[in-house]
Image 1 (cartoon, helix red, strand yellow):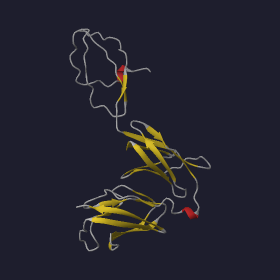
Image 2 (cartoon, one colour):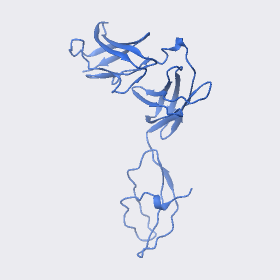
Image 3 (cartoon, helix red, strand yellow):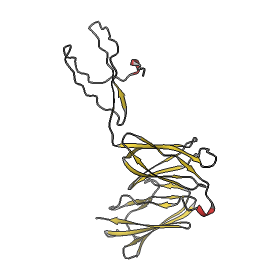
Image 4 (cartoon, helix red, strand yellow):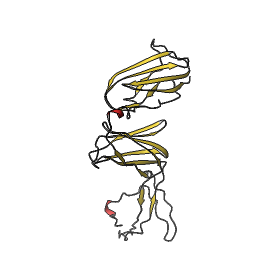
Length: 251
C-alpha cells in the first residue's frame, strides 16, 4: 500500500530522542475507535537531513460498537427503494435511517449483540431480520420487499416499548404507522381504570421513535395529578390496529 508522507497527520507530544540504539516508548492519544491506523517515522540530523521513510506498522483501535448497512430493493424488479425506513431495535434502544436514492442505508454506533432490523416502505410488506452486531464490524442487512395487498395495510404499524421503563416521572412511547391514521393512546392502572388519554390526532405514515416524535406521557392523569407508583398498561390504537404494552412507574 503506498503512503503519502506529506498528507499524514503528525503525532503530538513526541518526546526528545534517546541515544541511538535505545528503545523509545510513545503513546498516541485521541484515536478514533474501530479505526485502522498506519504509523511511520522519519528522523533528521542537525542540518537537518531527513531520513527515508521507516517501516509502516499498522494497528486497529478497539471499540464496543458496530454498524449495519445494506440496500432495500424491490423483490421483483430489483430496483432500489428510496426513502424506505430502516429500524434497528435492541430493547430499550432504537436507531433509524432512511434509504437514499440507491436504496442504501447505514446505522452506526450500535452496541454489540442481537438486533431486530425492520425495513418499512408504504405499499410494501415489511422486512424483518435478526442480526448479530459485532464490535468494530459492519453487518450487511439487505431487504427485498414485496408489494403488499390491501389485507397487509396494518403490517408496518406497530407499538414499541416505552423508554425509559421503569421511569420517573415521564416516558416516551414509540410507534410506527404504515399509513395515515388517527392515533390514540389510553393508559390504564393495574385495576383496569383509565387514567389518561393521549389523543395524538391525525398522524402521517412514518416512524415515531425519537423523543421529538414519539408520544410523551408526563406521568399525570387526565386531571393533571401525578399518578402513584406501580404497573400501568398503555393501549395504542391507529385505524384498525390495536396493541397493548406494560410500563412501570418507580418513585
